[in-house]
Structure formats: structure tokens, C-alpha cells
Image (cartoon, rainbow, N blue to C red; front, side):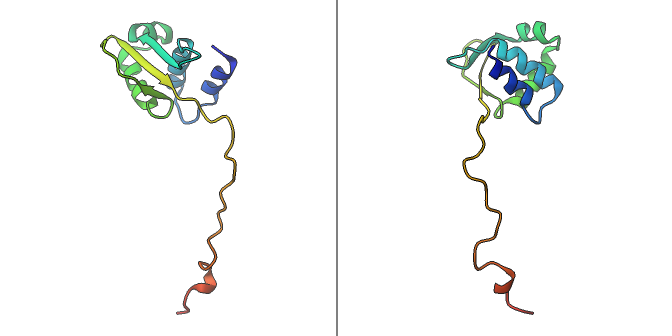
Length: 110
């Protein structure tokens, strides 16, 4: 596991300690080039000391934001792809000012 991958898991926002524990276990089996993880639920259970129902719930909560499920023919294998977090800030900050013409002076007086 690369230091950057470990840092991404620790900096992941809006996840529970259980989900973070699971992400760390998944990152240990993540292929650095393809970002694909091939790990069984029993392996995750041994690594995290969580039962399979807790793991299944945490995985479903992480899908979309940190994990994406890939098609798998085997029912016993969980194959996921880590979604890399943004490492750079937005190039341009959002301008919160209202567009010209929508200020208070353009509203009809009552």
C-alpha cells in the first residue's frame, strides 16, 4: 500500500470508524495499477474482525463515493475499484455573487 493511498483513507470524510477500517483492509488488496481489489468476504472478516453482515452494510454505504462494484461471476468474491479522491482543489473558486440585474435595486418597489 502506498503512503498516498493510506493518507486518502485517513482523510476520507463522512465515514464511520467501521467504514474506515474496511477501506484500510480493501486498500491492502488494491492493485496499484488497475485499482481493482479481489478479496473475499471471509478475508475481510478476518482482517477487520467484523462479521459479514456489518461488512456488507459498510460496503453498500461506501459504494458510489469510495468504491464501485464491478461485475463478478463468482458469488463468493467481492471485486471493487477504489475511486481516487481529488488531490487538487478546484481550479477556480465559485463566485457567490448574484449575476448583474438581480440585485435589490432591480426589484420593483411595493
